[in-house]
Image (cartoon, rainbow, N blue to C red; front, side):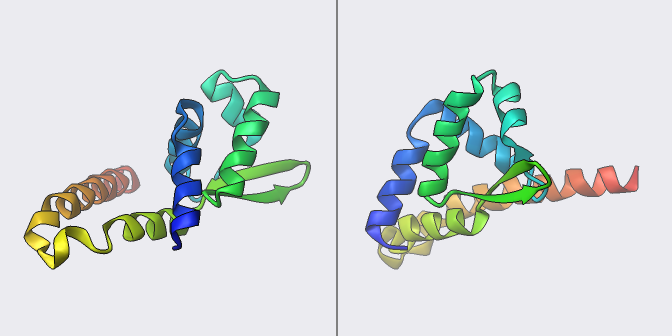
Length: 123
């Protein structure tokens, strides 16, 4: 990921509603949500939501897919992976022990999500 694209992505996320939208979409991967449902869940007028979704799409943080008459929005997790990798690529000058807490926090997050999914599937 280039610096310019990283700046665009970070700028898009540096606004409360867009950050909330992105986090909501991440929670609803891989199925995504239609724009109207996103607006309803976040109590944002649809025309305002459309503007926020456009900014996130231009920043390549969300993807769209037409399903019948609806446009489904999905978080682009690969773009986030590239952004995080870009930010941490030269982490601590190669001293992995300094970045270990970040990696551990991400691993714990993913592990707890996997455990919750496993519990739901076994129920």
